[in-house]
Length: 335
Ligand SMILES: NC(=O)c1ccc[n+]([C@@H]2O[C@H](COP(=O)([O-])OP(=O)(O)OC[C@H]3O[C@@H](n4cnc5c(N)ncnc54)[C@H](OP(=O)(O)O)[C@@H]3O)[C@@H](O)[C@H]2O)c1
Image 1: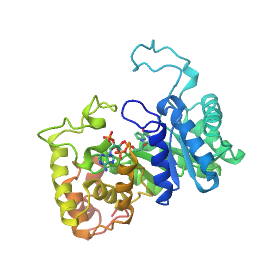
Image 2 (image 1 turned 45 degrees about the vertical axis):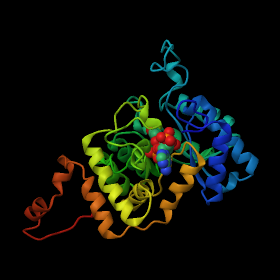
Image 3 (image 1 turned 90 degrees about the vertical axis):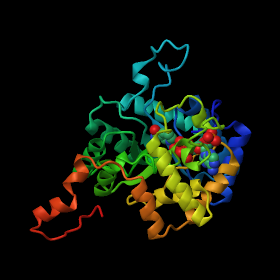
């Protein structure tokens, strides 16, 4: 997402350095989207992969869904583009995929994500279109990002009942300070055989520890207007960061490494995306892949960041289970 982005991203030379550092460390899974930097992210990535001659070694993921013909949020734009150039209807998916393949300079995508739910297209049509693209060989697999949990569940069920290719993964915001998805999305993914791929595992840089409660002015993505519209600088998040920093100090690792390692230890997580604006950030963060957190550290981090239990969590609480099983403690699959 940072490749080719002017504001808080990386220019061409820096993007190439990040890609090279990632490959050097053994990385083989890259995530982009048609909308990132107006298509420039895909163009850059395609050229790096071609120059390195490594297309077959890379698991290349990109996304469709957002509309590039007009962005009502962008300054100076009228916000009246082609409504058929976005969303998950068959017409847009075919258009978007062909454009992505051209920019990426390849004839197939390994993992094709629906970037955002459009709230309109019937789930059966989405499954049909994406399943057909798998069968045609233009994409190898598909998954859903930023959607209600029921949609992924319904899609997986329709696909298995119809005997057509179904979704294999979900991509959702997931980090020590963003755990809402544990209520519905993670259980759905595990039940439906989908891997969970977190985005913003460092909460856009917050969990690197470079911002301070008393001074948030330091340079970084979160110091300007937050591109995702919410503020990470809440009292709750500062408290979580305090625990993270203490654990990181004890382990003599950076907070970013420990935060990423915690994410990788979570049930259902298959892999994590990592964001970077420069190669040095990536090189440091990659060390998280080899960090095994012991149960004591994991418990402290998990407890300090525990979300307020909602309705779904209350259904499987121990006292309720005992009421169901005649006083016996029966653990469910979610544990
Ligand atoms: N599906 C979706 O809707 C969606 C949404 C968002 C992202 N994504 C995907 O997820 C990927 C990762 O998301 P993200 O970039 O938000 O992840 P992130 O890891 O939470 O944030 C990455 C940012 O944190 C800062 N940072 C990273 N390591 C650091 C370090 N060691 N020290 C200090 N600062 C550090 C950098 O920004 P600064 O230096 O500028 O502060 C970097 O760009 C994206 O590239 C994209 O592919 C998907």
